Length: 611
Image 1: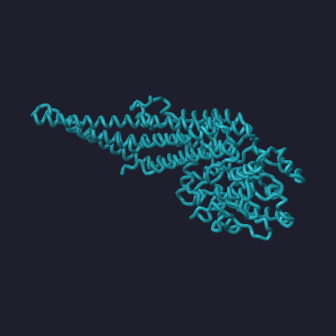
Image 2: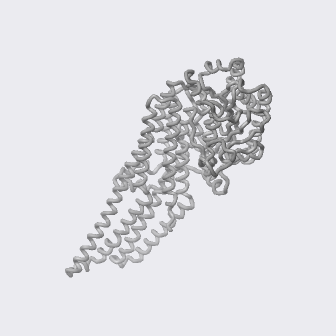
Image 3: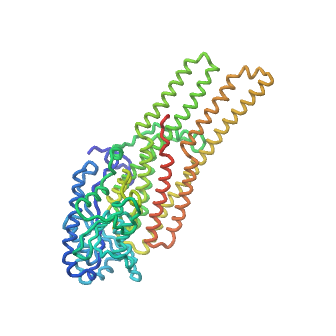
């Protein structure tokens, strides 16, 4: 594979593939079900075969999907993960069936392993054997004084780490915390499809998934969202989860992303020049290269690895997340510079062209040169818009920024073990509608399950670390960003207003001079014409820059987001349980995405077209 050197977070000069990473093909299946004492002898006798049949159907469908679309994924072999709390009964039976089919086992335990083993009674030996075969083991801070909380955490962790949940369930509503009914409700509410194997062995299995009825909110168990468990419906469900949205346009966007490259130098620095001209910040050499952006991303991830991952007893395989985020964030920063610079280029040259046209009155002997300049400027503006449109600066910037911000909080969500990002799509149709949602979901499943031990004390440290290194930096960024763009907007407003006042002064001088019959007005009439017509053109160009940049609106949105995140940061620093920390971190990610969605709607129609 051809490679090039690129600075990536976590390495000084790491060799990475040319372009963003392609997703490995990963499918994760979880299990929830009744304990052995709640299952009758007939059910227990039939259950291994029923579970094996369901898993085999899922496996065959997944492998067929991979075989039909290998170009969408990396060259790694398909990976099948199975997440189980390993309780005696359905959990252990399903884990054994999954291992026989080649799944990697991931154990999610509600209590410390030694404590949890005592719950297994005669099945403790099987528990030990399965735990020894697990690729990862996550021990959650369940407390015996409130056992149901521990089981609820294990259920939440299972749903967080799986794409599909198998439920050996009697179909009744949840009768308490942490039971199978509650885990099924969690999955359905989160948009995770459920294979329902009824506890009665003679009842047919079925699929529960909100996307089967995408018109209404199926937050409960709605018959309209039920389908028979057969190969056709399994394939329909897995295709929607594992493949990018259908349609030539989304597929084109995916391939364009994989083909991206980051240049060494920035040839469009008009935005940085505007900031310098407005006195907001100085123009620096780093504004013309990509090295500074790469270094900032790398150093931020290195600090996160050192101070968060290195200081806790939990781990997650974040290498692919790190690489994907680095590409998305760096590309978004690069394209934002191009897009903003392109707008400034067009508006400034447009105003200059008007002034040059008016200068023909003062320098009639330079009409050819002035006409040539206007022609060059007009062609430059058209070419600027054409190049920007053909290369999709605007669309790529918006897409990559949204992708980066979907990826950023995943490292902290994954470390919490029981947290997860919101599902793609909508509440009523939890299927990726855009390629960036598909790619982000693929990165989440590629990370795999969290491993380690979380007790009450470490849960508090983890919450505080997320506040320090995930939420607080975003608060600082939004406040700093709001300050910079607000100052830029105010200075541009003053400059534009000054041009209009100078026009007003020039017009008044002309009126007074004409009324008094002054020769000065006649002598310098061309200059007065230039000021009275040219300055409003320049002021309009300044207004156009402000309008397209929406600097004032961006500042207000950044401050609103900073305020919401500050409240979450404050809550994370209190005596916080793991459940509370997970809720807060999920909410922080939700706030940041809501701000980003609003930002995209505002900017979506502001491309670089000249029409």
